[in-house]
Length: 365
Ligand code: CA
View (tube, protein in one colour):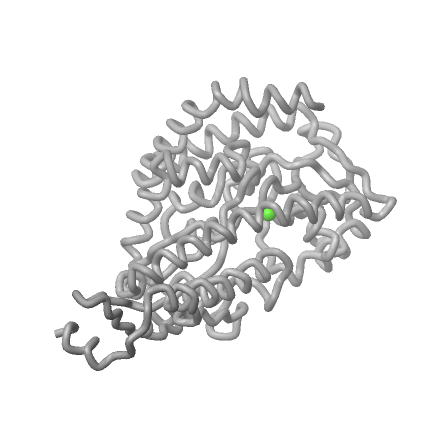
């Protein structure tokens, strides 16, 4: 019985306990005595798909782990392992599913091979912005579907950051019309890559470390990456000075995903702390991307020309996207289900967005 335990425990006032700032299980007896059991220390291994302390994404997960430690009074330690230390960058999903590690931080679209529906949780070309994606997840049914489908892999996902709008990419030559895309080789993953394929582009996947040299040598003609803050570090401007505005990743979602069995064994307190820290991380990351992209834009090399894709290309992209979504829905009933939920939110959101945010941004500009 716990009642017997506290009689031998330290007697301390509730006020002193509150002042201590530690997270402890406590029980109060009839005479007001409070028993304290220091929360059992839990250590979790989390692997990422990024290099150590990679700006914004990697430092974001470092801060998340630090916050979990602080908020738990030191009882929850999340050890962050950069890519390829415990497991290769793109095996973090399988390793967590198999309980070789406890959790991972990565991008959702990497796992579309596991289930095509996962690409929608990562974000949609020409679709929802980061804030809208998070709203769909939390209030529009997205999270429930994501957790159900990840549950089949014994995984429990949380949003672990978001990029805000990404740029359309760096091109060696100017794109004046849809016809200029024909036969171009471009590094572009996900649904955006599928759309580009229908527009005549040859989409290729390359590890981050090989993109610049491929561009410089002409093995590829174009690449997308993220936005000015992270793109500047890659030096793309030297090899491909035409920098296009974005359409294919308006609000990409990153994930902090746990092995589900491990998650369910965590205390309610630790689960609450992780959930709160992941929300904090998500809003911080969105703000950090906004601020650092704005700053980096001011100091892009002088040879960079910022361009918008031609209208005939964007019109064709909208049609191609419909075709891609229909193809995927034919092949996968999960994709069809997630798309239905996503589109229901798009339909709900649009009339309000039109007269609120969009209307205001037009007035303000
Ligand atoms: Ca990207």
